[in-house]
Length: 314
Image (cartoon, rainbow, N blue to C red; front, side, top):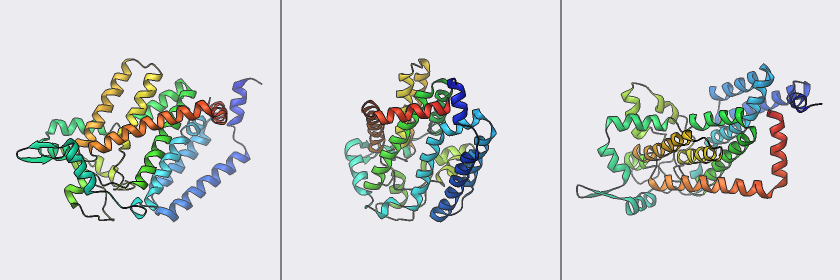
């Protein structure tokens, strides 16, 4: 039997696969309801997965490949059920004061954080450009993942696992070092208020300019206000650029680099992250990439699992 026949057999519909997908779908919906209550997002995710799984062999391979990202999204979503401020004290004043000490800007007789400076000196043009950059933080990695899926399944799996690993490292920091974003200090001061809702902060200017609620809808679904450090928004473009360079994408990497710098700037400009958060996000990305490469080079088991999974989605 040739490799293509083996691959098609590995993703064929049979009673076992139907049972497994059905049980996982039901278990996910029940667990989601118990942990965070009913939300249409969970039902939509289950419908998309099931439709693509049963529609055809190509769509089945596609959704199985992107199952790695689905697992990440579920973990992120479930963080709502376990607020990090229940496990460790939230850092507010210390981060704010350290940011001002290291990166403070003297302006009209006052020492301001970069966020405070840009809040006063922003322009409509920067608001629009910054908003466009920040809208890239998920679509660009997912579009790049889709490109790799069709171009090089091995690189797709490595990129996907690195992406998830970087997120997991970030989640560990979220729970060991809860930190408030700059906008929290602007609106609530230095005292801790556990039930604070997400805020669009400076990105509200983008929504207002286009008379849309794009960022408002995004931040209404946030899992935790006190998860500003590290800035995973700043981590994602680092991973994309790394794998772009690794895959020799040439001029496309210039685009990735520009998006990366734009996201870093916007994170600070829009008061969603301190410079410290951005630096922590960069370090988190480098650490995750290095750790994955180390594990892949040392673990025969991981290499075998990657090879096996690659056969399923080829």
